[in-house]
Amino acid sequence: MPKLYFLRAMSVLVLLSLTACQARSFSASPLQAYRQPYLQTNSLSGLSAPVEYGDIAVKFNNAYHELYVHNEQAGRQDPQNPDKIFVELVKRAKKSLDLAIYDITEPSIINALIQAHQRGVRVRILTDSDSLEAGRFSAEHIQTMIAAGIPIKGDHRTALMHHKFMIIDGTELLTGSLNLTHGSLYRDNNNSLKISSSQLAANYQVEFNRMFEQGLLGPNDHTIPYPIVKVDGGSIRTYFSPKGGTKQAILETLGRAQKSIRFAVFSVTDQDIQKLLIRKAREGVIVE
Image 1 (cartoon, rainbow, N blue to C red):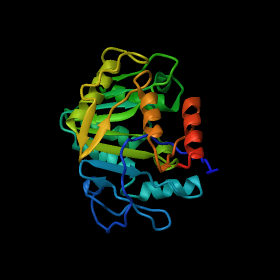
Image 2: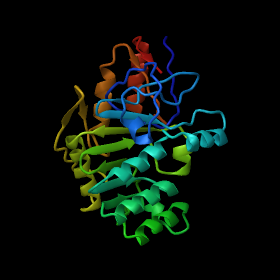
Image 3: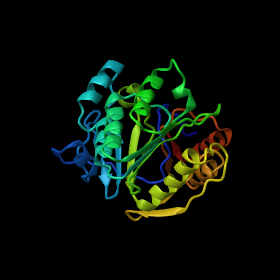
Image 4: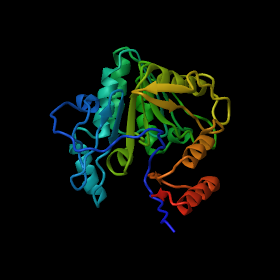
């Protein structure tokens, strides 16, 4: 029977594929490196992968060493680590930055957001209420932004506000598994995905407004203005949890797999997804 592997790494399911290739070297600023097609990335054992194809770009933080301390050294020194990319994107914003993030403590990013606010960019932040509690490490950093005039709201419920996305000027979307914290940026394995699409940004904008302006979190109606968005010849479908069709979309997509299923995820606890992965492995599909 084919082996079934569960990889414990923080990630998100994205319904698109990027083909690995040997990339040419390129000397560029972090933002240029994020935008330029097929650039050399920092790699493990000489492997490399494209960072962008057209309007879609992906980044993995430099955190593949044996020790935390080595991950942090590599990430802080790497000009293409996602923390630098995030700061550059914030600096580039002209009109608006709407950020939904579970946790934020990284000083360089906080400073960039404050500077954006000070130059007239509308900055709004939604976070989990636990991050606002007095005594928590994140609360001090959040209070710094509130004192600077940035409106920040919590979810005010026991369940988690676990989103990690930012909408830039209504035209670009940044999402992935990254929290904007020391551990997430410099120690743990995480990914960051930037997509240039006003339609996809609009889908996330509606969700952000629903939570930030109306205070509607949890299993409410998730309005999707553009159910299918075309980017670089591919189709992207948007789902929000809870009760937004995410699980069913995952099951349907995995159910169509004929050759392989490869995923990196912190944990898989949903029994229906577990059963489907086991069935696919027994059918001969490579599941790793």
